[in-house]
Image 1: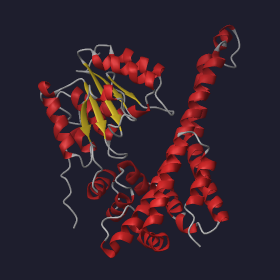
Image 2 (image 1 turned 90 degrees about the horizontal axis):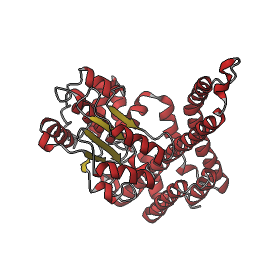
Image 3 (image 1 turned 180 degrees about the vertical axis):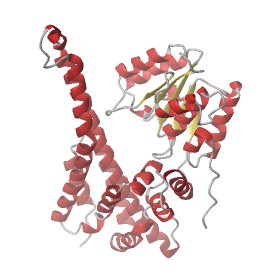
Image 4 (image 1 turned 90 degrees about the vertical axis):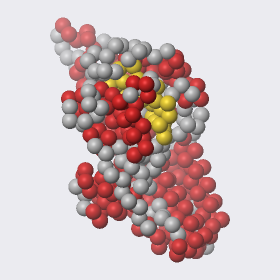
Length: 394
């Protein structure tokens, strides 16, 4: 039985999908200074909208009307151009001490025009230990008109140090319901209702993924290619071919995402340094080699992160299919909602061929692969080991 769709929120809160309790809590904090605190920690699974909720909260804090969504303050915050709202998004694998020190300098300023000085850190779980320590010191003694908004997947110490967590007010987001995601795709993005329903169901509760699946044929084809893998793995050669395909697809996505951006950044830096210039200003380029090297380092780190994110998305999809096989093996036709309802026949075939124990072993192998990638094992090696572990019994 399908549950009722949550009534859409208004103003900036319309951006926050399927989180009525969170919206109510944040609205109360905006309206009542006594309910306000200087450090907030937004947690929730990938795609739940942690950073979206934090941005909406930042807009509402600056808005004279609590986030009407139409005023200059709201529009500039949501567009990322408000002078008193600073969003830290890690380009690479981590947020280091240098970025944290820059963040602290910003946090120490008085608001230039807004009501608050807001520092929003997306993926705060990527802060290095030195960065976390620097942020902790500022959170312990925050300036009077500064608000810290940190976003992380969970409260686990691997994601957020206990010392930081204990000094923040925690806002927990949940995985949005399929109906809520589908409704916003139709209402906000003008997606056909049938495609919206399919995309929402296929997204695993990830709002951004659902939107991409609804709007991008390439994304739908990439998902199909990943979910075709398990039933392909009938021989060692097929396993190695599948690993090649998965790594190659991640590399293609990385190249597409970084090629134009890297070129533009490098050219802009060279121009600012006067590289290639002649005449009196040529001395400006001296010492620029170090800055170019640092830029290349950041670009390489960003490319690595994009590639890892692409592979991780594929691994999550694979784990979801084996989870569906496990559920179908246990419940049969009475299975609850599946992660990949459009691939039910594949999940049934996997359930028949590998059984419950085999599905569990393969899920464990996928988790091992994710850990290996996090520990900098070469993707080709990690994926070949995985696909061999996923091989179907003869």
